[in-house]
Image (cartoon, rainbow, N blue to C red):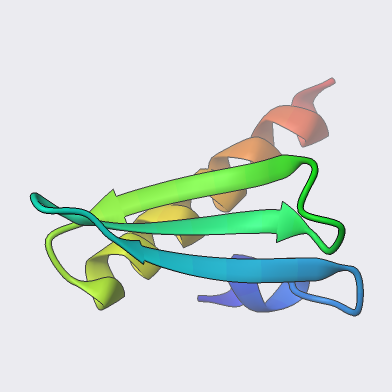
Length: 65
């Protein structure tokens, strides 16, 4: 989960939420105002992996610009 590790710093919060049907992992700015990326899954691990993949896709898109 390199992308997630790289994205986490002093100014970000990682929020794990349990919904009735799934888990959600959300990377937020530390002030909680802006959602950076989100991942969902049937377990916390799946949600974190999905979040990591979302960050990876964002990174690749930014690299193409």
